[in-house]
Every structure is written in C-alpha cells, then in structure tokens.
Length: 309
Image (cartoon, rainbow, N blue to C red):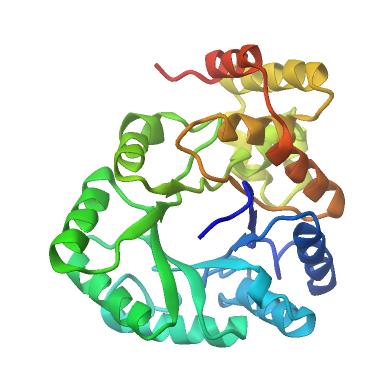
C-alpha cells in the first residue's frame, strides 16, 4: 500500500470545519496528487453536543457525493471510548467488531484500508485484539492494521504474537512526534519501527498548531479552539524552535508549517506526517511542506533548536 508523503488529518471535519468546507479541502487534497486520509471513530466526541463519529460521517457523505472512495487510502481507528459500556471502548474483540460495523456505516464504504488501535488497553490481551483484526481481514472489511498510542513493550509484544500465531501484523505506528515532542519517539519507538519496517505516520505534526507560528504570545491562544493545547510550549525551547523555523523559512522562501513538515520528512523512519487544515490556504501550506527539501544546514539548525539530549 503506497501513499503520497502527507496524510490529511480528519479530526477537524464536522468540528472546526463545516461539511461544505470539508468537501472542498478533500477535493483539493486529492486534486494535488495526495491520497491518504486519517480519522477515528471518536472524532469529535470532545465537542459539547457531539457523540463521536462526526468526522467519519462527513467523509462518508463526501465519498457518496464524489465517488472518490477508490482513490483514497482510508485510515480510521478504534479503541477510544464511544460510551461507558464494556463493548463501547477499548480493544476487546466485542468492541472492535461492533466499532468496525459502525465506522463502515458512517463512512459509507465496505472496507477500511488501515484500521488502527487508537489507544492501547492493558487489561486486554494482545491476542484478543489481534484475533479480532484477523477476522476482519479475512472478511475483507480491513486491509491492514496499525497501532497508535502504544508503549514500546506492548508494540513489541504485539509484533511477536502476530508472528507466533499467524495473526495480521501492525504495519504502521501513529505516534506523537514533532519538533517539540521528540524524546519519547526517538528513544525507543523509532528504533523499533526502523528494525521492524513499520511505516510511521506521526500525529500532531505541527504540535497542535504551535509550529505554524500563529501562536506567538499568550493572547494568541484565544485564536483557535485548540489554542490552550499549545500553552505548554511557551518556554525558552519553544521560542527557540519558532526562531529557527522563521530563519529557515526565510532562506527557503517558505513558511513555518511547511518547514516543520519538511523536517519530519527528513527523518529516515518517517513515512508521512499527519496534518489537518481548516482552510484551503492552510492546506496549500501543508502540501508545500510535503514537497520542500531542506538543506542539511537547515535540518541541523532545527535539530539543535529542538534537541532533547
């Protein structure tokens, strides 16, 4: 399964982007030659009045209206809590089988290209989770599986069990990884992905918007519903990273968001960053990031500004 080097994040569809604007962004993304879209069954349950599944529903309507399902590598997730019952959260077999049926209905499709474990559930044996995925792959409802928020130990255990029992194997990892969040991934998860040949599709590639440069002061946090999520980056390191992004952007005639994505793509283990857009202008910046090649000096400057060691 091959994708262009950028994954469009669907978390904003049905939340900060209405249906018509979502359709426009999706059409433009595909028209530019990109093909991978990531969502989850819980998007956007955190919004008052929402119950989860809003993003998948918008995508399903777009597939139905555009006829472009066959042109898309569709990724969604299971594992977040959709309710309080035992069968409405986690990675138990019963929940996975129910959740995939619900997702397929909302997405108006009969298969998912990449079905991912959104959050690990330590109380559920990895064998039970992988057995559920095995049934879905055999039924043709899922092509490949991936993991997201897993510890190194559970990721390695899952890979061992898949090999020993002949279950489908996690082919991708969706980790938190960006210029502000490097240590956890680079210390342990990255080496596992490199050793095992896993595709890496980082989420929060722009650190919830901080790396776009639109948050420069505490007052800027009110600019977006996601603003409070970047408050933790207002420190010497964060301001140093923004300064480096600004300087590289000037040299490359680009912008901070494009440069931050290009930095991720300069990492040998990264397949494609995930980033979301709420406007066509933002989308253009993301697409430029996937096509921008940084000079080694640019990469070194960004590495130094964001170093954790």
